[in-house]
Length: 259
Image (cartoon, rainbow, N blue to C red; front, top):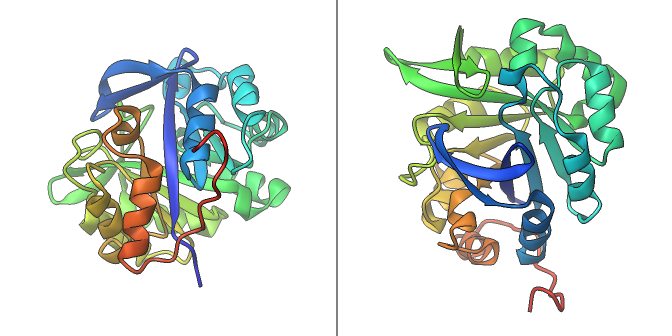
């Protein structure tokens, strides 16, 4: 039976984890390696590390921070931000990432998805989409939600998969940090349109919202951030709620540090 995954997102700016609302009003919440290890021990199935200003600032991600984070983890680590070429992806993978997330670069040069998939395998390539509702459609934005593209989210998700993406990370800018639930309509539209796993992102405020991402949004993974950073919930509590709702989850392994 397919296990539903709970993924913790670390939005990183200048080497520190930050969190905001709708991609603005960022506040510092901690050191990436420490937080990643804590969430792994608490039951997170994966960690996603997103350097949220790399593309906007025209630079590659902070690989030393990635390396320090990867060295402390056993669960899969996805790294995104500033990855513009297959060589950039190779550097992130060598630094310890298991997967790379591509958001801005494919909009400017779609072939980068195919190049990464052919070189490292589709399972290593996550197509990342930041979408906002505009005039009755979901429009794709890049550069950390700063730049409109004119692309429609569902169609762009299909194209990313055609190019070679093995997963889609789908973030609702409207819901990001608002804690009023995922955009289930958007998530379901993309999940039903593509044959690869979709990761729901943006809006988790409680465990019920996470369950809804799976049962109503048809996602195969859910990404959470702020509710864990602020101590509203733990990864263990969310996974317990998922299991109680009849979702198959990976078992939690007790450790001395987690007890």
